[in-house]
Amino acid sequence: MWLLFKVPLPPEKALTRSVLEVQDARRQIAINLPIIDVCNTDYSHILHYGVIVSQSTKAFGNPYRGNSECYQNTIIKNYKSWRDVHDDDEVPPYRATFDDWKQMTDCNTTNSTRSQDIPEYISFIVGQDGYCEDNHPIYCNGYLKPNTEYRVKTFVCASGGCAESMWSQPMKT
Image (cartoon, rainbow, N blue to C red; front, side):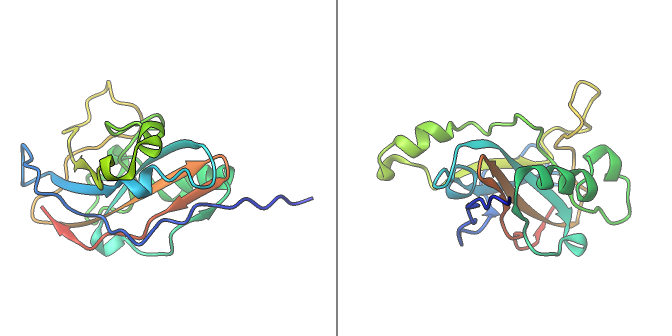
């Protein structure tokens, strides 16, 4: 017997570059993550969410929508760690956030607060972990290459399944 889960679809809100100042503009990019992407509990309880980064020439394909177990296999197969890809000539998609990552927001509080009090975006700095020292988990948010275009997308996994956003427009370091 097959069970079909209603997977939350990412809304049309785009990931955009933030005006937030970064420590190293040559190797970091500040972006705005739409709250509605990372805190969408319309269909089920959020298990985890995160950020995928790629050099823009390698960012393509349809966003994933499906069950959580298959998505974990998708992550392992398609999204490497920063350590695996940072020296590549063209950086393929990698996961910049670890499994229990939380970006300075409590989605449960956000969803129960009056809508006019909810921030529209949360800021995230791609490249914030620098050289990803050994104390970082397998996935880390390491430096970007200077003078290079990147694209970013988010994913959310809930008890009803997982869904990715579309890739952002290119953003240059």
